[in-house]
Image 1 (cartoon, rainbow, N blue to C red):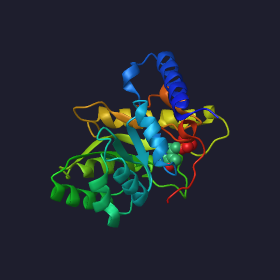
Image 2 (image 1 turned 135 degrees about the horizontal axis):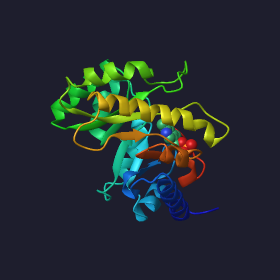
Image 3 (image 1 turned 180 degrees about the horizontal axis):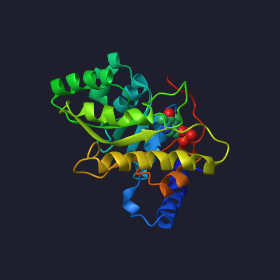
Image 4 (image 1 turned 45 degrees about the vertical axis):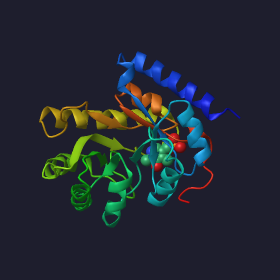
Length: 236
Ligand SMILES: *Cc1c(COP(=O)(O)O)cnc(C)c1O
């Protein structure tokens, strides 16, 4: 079995090749190590390779991992799971970015706790790009009005959109969804509804389809099993 270091090297090379194919700048894509269900030891191995950005889905699990890695001040944490507004305080404390804001109530709860912490938080709006009944995220046509509403919250910096398209058998089948997310973001940016001083962020693509996502404009790819191997235990 390849080591985490070998996997990271391979993923970086695949991202670099996809970036090149798309004629994009290499530094325009960041790798988020989706580390739910992975042991702290594996996170340490990733950190040793300069992989310092992690995506976590569960608050308790993330807290435990952060506590075990206090000697690694360079680690950065994105929340990529489903967040209930009654857990906003913990999320506001623990994370450097929340990628899954999809309703006003959650945003309002985050704002309240961030204000108390005097902390400004980059966030992404999660879009249910495949219009799936069971999936989190705002519908594409509602993304603009949510982004507009989020402007009332001074401690939230809306940097872009995030999506998880329907599970597909082939990576190519994800492409239309990635493209749709990019076009949605570009449209909102053109109307000045989305985006600010920094680059417009698009978080899309996982182990099976991150290269297609990069070709379609992803700035954040969230890769779990291809980087760490199979998850040991999710949510513990
Ligand atoms: C688990 C997870 C990933 C990573 O999935 P892999 O298929 O293991 O790469 C990416 N994004 C989100 C939101 C996840 O929950």
